[in-house]
Amino acid sequence: MPLIWLIRHGDYDYMDPAPETIGQGLTTLGQEQAKYTARYLSELDKPPCKIICSDFLRAKETAEFIAAALPSAILDVDPRFRECRDVYFKHRPEISKSAPKAYRRLFQSTTSNDAPTAVVCHANLIRYLLARLENWTEERWESVLIGNCSISVVDFVTKSPSQKVLRAETSVAHLPPSLREQL
Image 1 (spheres, rainbow, N blue to C red):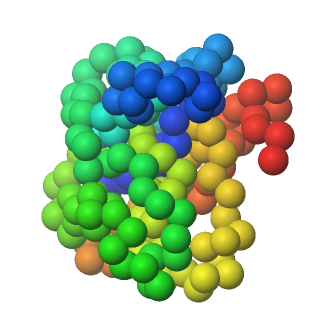
Image 2: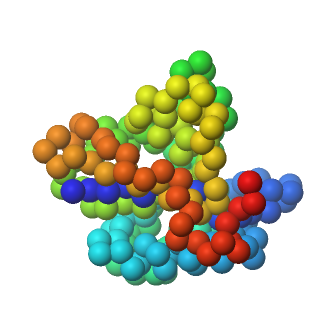
Image 3: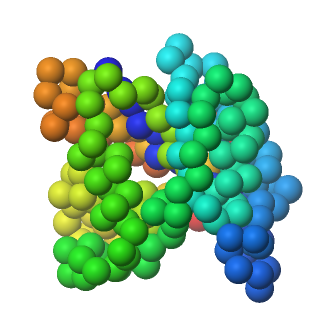
């Protein structure tokens, strides 16, 4: 049964004026969050075999910590997993050209033989993916906070890969309280 872990990148330097593909990297706090997340994933009974990440520096750095803890996992940097605008997707389906492509890559091409996958990306993209999977209302969309290095697990029903069941959502329980965002 394939699992997909949707992981937001760690805390980053949002004041860095450099383009997001080469700047706005992880802060010291973000690096610690990424290390704890990597350790958590490495200790699972069935850890991810694949890691997909955005090409933005903060996501790549987070994914590299995870890849170091999962040396047999394959790392794939994919620009379709970039951040998208925070606009309720049913009102503005054009919010991002890459978000629907990321959705298709993860959920419309997945089969029961696919390997467990960690996806390191961004809060609004995770919100978009979860909203499409669960058919969220606008109120639900606006109420979900996606913290740094939070993990959302999408679990597929074994006998019907087209049915997706959200098992956990935006959990930071794997992080010690000192590394959680103060929202």
